[in-house]
Amino acid sequence: MKRILSCMQPTNRLQLGNYLGALRNWVALQDEEGGKNECLYGVVDLHAITVPHNPLALAQATRETAAAYIAAGVDPKRSYIFVQSSVPAHCQLSWLFTTQTPMGWLNRMTQFKDKAGKNKEKASVGLYSYPILMAADILIYKATHVPVGEDQKQHLELARDIAGSFNEKFNSGKEFFIPPEPYIMGTATRVMSLRDGTQKMSKSAESDMTRINLTDDADTIANKIKKAKTDAGVVPHNDGECEGRPEAANLIGIYAALADQTKEQVMQEYGGQQFSGFKSALVDLSVAKLSPITSRMSELMSDSAEIDAILKAGAEKANELAKPTLEETIKLMGFWS
Ligand code: AMP
Ligand code: TRP
Image (cartoon, rainbow, N blue to C red):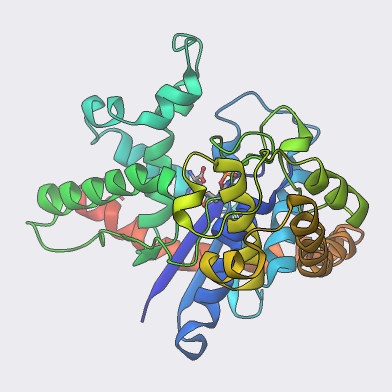
């Protein structure tokens, strides 16, 4: 049996890239193997506070992220949806790992360098040690498979190293922590900004016109797609014609992902046409696919009691699963207890 775990941070609004690159695959994994996989999906609020955050908005952003999981098709009856801070074992295990992880391993993490930028001295220690908390998120449940985007592969590799080194030091090399497998799904799509095809679509980009939020209504989606950057050419016929045209390639990729088609199929249908026509088709498709998600999300957000009850049940289950791993780890490390 596979135990699948993945998480997102409750920062800003979720956007189309989160759906096509992550959430959609989480749902597929939940439904795979006739529903036999055990799936845990976390909202990692402790990761979100590694950069300055607004205490007045955190709880609501946490609910909204969980609502997006459910609206996208994660079924709380079959998958566990939980909030990281409601399972204290994540922090406890994270500290144990922090003391065992060489600084050299963290110094290699490229995401810290990107996120801290020039202001390394001012970045929080938490931002630096963030990948250790992520390793704890995964290893505390002995998850076997972790669906993540390319940008998280290095962090997953670190989790594998932490697991291996713990097993070596404290369990005579026998497997206690399971080195998790990255699960880079074939269907995952890297969605780029609507304004610059070389930049990832991101919920933290300054301009809202660069992304489609999972809370955007039909008119907003239409407006953003119509204003999306393209070039003077027509819709390409093949990959070769996409060369050097990242914006065209991106719109085709989004269409293909939403329609469950290959890019080739999309280019066969629309190749040679003006972008205006293709964009209209993309608007219709996007609205058709996203509006059920949007409306389910707003329904869930209008009644926080329902979402809170789901998160409470998820926390109970997650705590139950985490407890024996933490107890065993403490024993293996030789603590008094
Ligand atoms: P983030 O929003 O960066 O915290 O990412 C949460 C999850 O969504 C991760 O699994 C990312 O890989 C995925 N994701 C975020 N943005 C995109 C994007 N533009 N294209 C594909 N996947 C994305
Ligand atoms: N670091 C991940 C991101 O920013 C989020 C995350 C935290 C995560 N813990 C995790 C993803 C555990 C997978 C498994 O996207």
